[in-house]
Image (cartoon, rainbow, N blue to C red; front, side, top):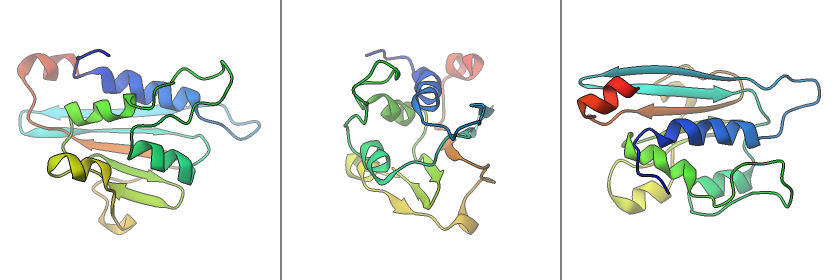
Length: 145
């Protein structure tokens, strides 16, 4: 496991690559990165099939949903948690799910808090969205973002 605070970018790309897509859909992923001295945010989204109950459960625990084939990159089920290196309260919006994690202590990182769509701090795009309010980051990490 790497210790770079920027690993989350690779992990989000990997998650989008590992997703299933409807027939005829060209996989796409987007990023908006707005780092500031006071924090800022990262908003990432993809146009894949919305997260399933099993995939949401895997996000809030440390387990993998990897299929028994070599078509996916991820395997251990812990990479997504790298977002906590840069965000104190990541939001997930996908299909019928709208929640955030974190805000204090390890337990809050594993217990989703429902967030009404009207209360989201971002405008969700179609598909799966990850919104990461950034922690106060050091100058080197801000430059690398």
